[in-house]
Image (tube, rainbow, N blue to C red; front, side):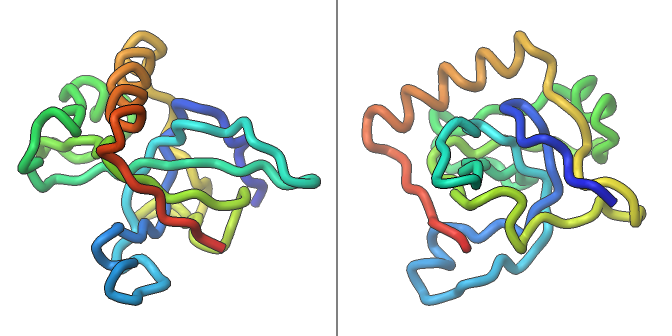
Amino acid sequence: MTFPDPQPGLVISYSYLWHHEHRKGSEEGRKDRPCVITLAAERIGEATIVTVVPVTHTPPSDPSVAFELPAPVKRHLGLDDARSWVMLDEGNRFAWPGYDLRTLPRSKEGYAYGFLPPKLFELLVIEFSVVWATGQASAVPRG
């Protein structure tokens, strides 16, 4: 099975490590979840460094640092019908593909759900940029 190209806007299955778990000393994510690639431009040697932000069902305590995924987009990606938010105030950074990329649930093929619609991704990036530029976000470096 081949890995997809790490392109911004691609939603992947990933073992995400939350910042609060990392602060407590965890090195592995506790749950595989959809994550959105927001950045994939940095290069170190031959590796592409990507930043992903998590998708969660848990409503955000601060709505200004989250982006709700519309139901039609969730259906397009093959996700469940429950409300979900992309959390913009934290992310994981890793060299692609890394150890924590996972095959899709209920499938042994593929690592990606698909792309967010371009206009929706543009809005997400604008909000993501504001959150990170104002120092409200933190990145967890992964292997």
